[in-house]
Length: 106
Image (cartoon, rainbow, N blue to C red; front, side, top):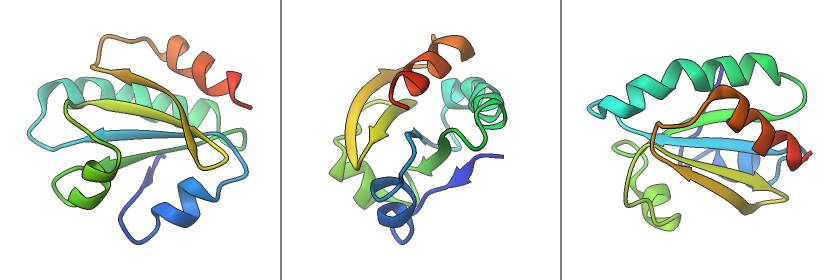
């Protein structure tokens, strides 16, 4: 199961992680976010132990959404060593494409 990242745990769970991290910026009211949600859960299960996968609800964590300049959701940000290394905007992406980007950072 994917993590829930918030303003309080983002620093330790994402920025200080020793593994690559995928952060899905989403909202409850967002249709495409709901479509990609199960794919994110599959990626989380498939890469358990190899990468950290989680979500940020932009309505609950507005400061994070502003910090990372989230203008459109879903937004997938790929982190390594506390830095954004890649991104995907929108839900038109496959599980294999997401996994490949994440594993390329390992």
